[in-house]
Length: 600
Image (tube, rainbow, N blue to C red; front, side):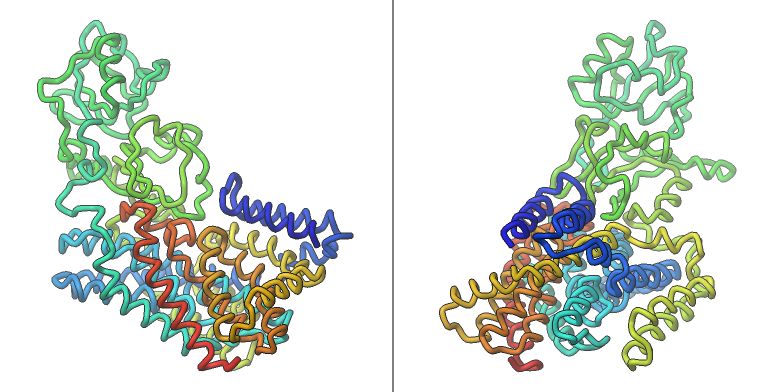
């Protein structure tokens, strides 16, 4: 048992510090449990059983079903309608945004919901002048709470149902906790529409242009290429290749004609004007040693970086655009240099916003993180490619030409069928969800080559790696021992107070570790504690499940928080300021709601 606690502590430390991705940590936990079988009581078959668990396979299927809805463009259409219909009233648009994010997250994965709503919020903000900071955090919070409307709302619910079935022989039905989920969602919505809206700071001002919002004024400048410059005769990629300076050539101007990406093979000539992204020190080094002169008016405007091409050359039109890195993107942990980002995507990174911090210096050496917002200069064709890439969220782009709008009724019908078959107990959710995958592909809602790319494999490996940890907690008696410690420490408190304490503790730890890890660790302990104090264990399972979906105190507690962290320009402490009061309110509301619907 002590060895198992050591494994848990090491895993928690790795979850918090993330020296490696959390799914890799989960697989490491699985391997450790199998190797140390005499002490953990987890053999090889049990250890890898997480991959064949109904929870893991069901979550995988739900990713594909969500992709069918995403490819249809349904939520984008609703978002565009909201932007047009409620664009003149900040309060109405807040209510509409809250309703859309909370309502849809109960039936499709909340990560793509938020990914779709980020550009919608930006479009609304541009139209009304309301800061996106005022809307994006509520979008994330409501998407979290909306996941508690149904069994399939989040992977956490599905995993908790699997654990409950194994330990109590009582899995969750499709609408097991919908009545409480509605109460929790309404509570969160009322708070965010009243008290919360005044606590959320305006970190991004809509009257600022992009280069001002990313503090680019001091980092963009123009230089003339003299005849004696070693740059003459070299390509753009060669000019800075051997120089130890933090600079990029963003644009080349020759005879009143501006050239942008792709620039690498463009040869520099005498008299060319180069637009540089660089700091003051690097600029002085270039001017002194490389035969360059500062332009008389070296300040670069946003209009200079957005070039309009002739109709025949529309693909060369340049724009500035914000692009957010998705939490499941494989390029997380890489640098712009190792990715060869400029050559790979035909786009120039001008700045990186990470929360409320804007990074300009040595960007090529910075490891990219989930939620980073990149300020890019790129052509319309390149921006369209970013819009079609699940690894990125493009701000301000609500529509795509390749949405399968004609498939909207079919995609909705398939998801409704999956839900109905499971709710009526005609088939288990596992079977109906897998059938939904077949239907999505057969009807063309999802193309065969999109099935595997639509799955967030990090979540699948995380679930598979953590499921045997819950088994070990039970078999070794670790959960029972922790429960006895809690019972003694509670000092004879009423079961309702103990239930509330479990909710609050789970909610706190889920802000620093994975919500799925919280469920796996806490449900066995909660069940043993309930049994020890003579209470019904199922309400305790629900308390842990609901609490695991309320990671509102930090931007790192939940994927959707990370997604809005950069686009909203938030500081780390903003989430605590807004989320802490809501967390306390939900502790009371959820605890009393559980006791009312499922007496303990």
